[in-house]
Length: 175
Length: 175
Length: 175
Image (spheres, rainbow over the protein chains, first blue to last red):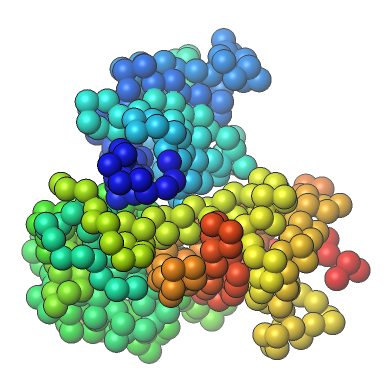
């Protein structure tokens, strides 16, 4: 999707607009998550979205070494998973920041992108602030559905993660 | 680079250019603040800019719970307020980073935008490094004045702020 | 929302596309560095790239006060310098994030840009995690070579850097 053929769709302007819209979509998802607006979070994704971003979450039933087992499929299931993790009995304050997108249009209605990311999560256990701090890259795919871009795939790769020993303690017995 | 072709207003290309210009404007403000270039800081704003970004600053005379009382109006007053806070008798090192803009054009000459943000501030009290670290979102409005975009409104909402107990000590008796 | 106008070169659409491509180029360099893909790192730069980003690295043979002496010239030399620093006998985990670009096209095939940046580096010395944490701005120049944008110049200015006392210990005897 590089040259500027008149008449052919999309034009250069439309390509750049698509990239801009995809960047805003990505921004909307992170903000919806960090401000716990779960309806807005869900509508950022296609109905059949596949997310492989859960490798950090301990789960005795899902081996972390098997990528396929860290998958969540569908906008409803994904929203339920993430809201349950951050906005259940324990409220987890989260900051997810995304940086320097590399967006590539693969057709007029599909694209892929990689974003540098950093996330910090905190919850309060009495006087102790439990904290997790991660760095990595989101690898995403996008699809235009009914005139609006949505995220259809996401994988998270990590450069570094640190956490307090008790960070995942609030999940005990829940996963 | 010369300006675009006169025609229908605004074309897709002109819309994307406006978004790009607004993003550069936002970048210029943060860089002017962190490098303490106050003339450049002022010119990022409209003469009638309204800023509601001071809720973090303690002030016995302005109740923090009343949003209207944390307002600063006008580019000159705003620049004086922020330069006084960071570049007075005590030099405060600051880093303000903005992420993942969601820019929406509301007319050919007006727009609004939300940015994820993180700020860190430090000053040295003898051997002690006083430090403040915040996360949140800037909610801004923009207006094109004499062919150039400027910020006409800003509000800061917070996800989390931590600071050393003595951080605001250098302001004692000044506000 | 009409499409863009075809006319003089570069059109508004092409200008915005160039800015987008330069931003992706910048993103590619940081990701190549942090994921240690050195072939990709090299190809982000012109053959004659000049980098003045090494002022933080102590070197008894190169006075830090003399900017000219912190220069590395050429894509091959630059890649060798940075890969040697981060991916030699001691593996250094790095996170480089870039924010809020201010890109200015200076001709159809040249541009300059400033980016806010933050970098963190870690390596493990037994039980001790050595750590460096910096903030500043990249000042870059770009050139389009054979249809593809590349970085032709980079300088790093700093707002703040902190590091553990032993951080540069792994370089002893190497520079």
